[in-house]
Image (cartoon, rainbow, N blue to C red; front, side, top):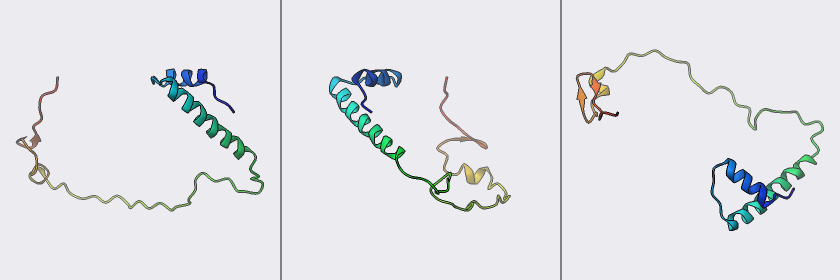
Length: 94
C-alpha cells in the first residue's frame, strides 16, 4: 500500500507536527514499506495455531501485601532540605 504525501500531511496535521518536504518524502516511503510488510503477514498460514494473548505465559510474580509500621516522620524527613515539624516545606506555587 502506497502512502501519498497528502496522507502524510493529513497525519502530520492530526498529530500537530510540522514536517518539511524532505521528511514527507521519507515518511511516505517508510510508512509504505511498513504497510507492505503488514500485508505480507496477512498471508501467513496460522491454521492450527492456538491464539494467545501474549508472547510469554508467566505466573504471577507479585508477593502478598505485608502490613508493616511506618518508620515515622524523623526517618522519612531525615533528608528533607526543609521541614516544618512533621511536614516537608516546599516553595509556594500559585
